[in-house]
Image (cartoon, rainbow, N blue to C red; front, side, top):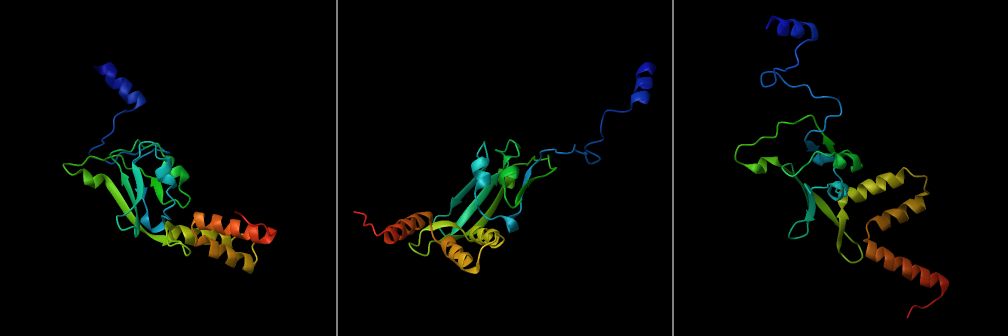
Length: 179
């Protein structure tokens, strides 16, 4: 017994007073992802990158809001959502105590974003924040004011209508008729 105490004295204690004192996690610890609604643009990159489908992004029933939902019970803490988020709206934290008593809804984070409708056809295609973020990024590019206004117009049009406009412009400029 004395030899064990001598070894402990020499090398130090390897246990922690965890429940009574906060546990210090290592650097780059992958804990619970935390969602910051204020800076989310609704690009859905995190939902696409999530292997266990813990993050779902879908429209509500009346198609007026985009619902972002994170279910921590499904999360495998891989960190893919953190890696792909362009704005840093979802970051891995140091939280590792995720136990809940009877209500698993405490493990769900949710956010609602306003959607953007196409100016040509009225179809929902993006979120308002994503369009604003895209314009902000474009305004930092070296574009002339005319080009910037054209780009702003195109940001409010869905991909299908953009494609149709491009085909129409191409046929008009080349003088060809498509039949």
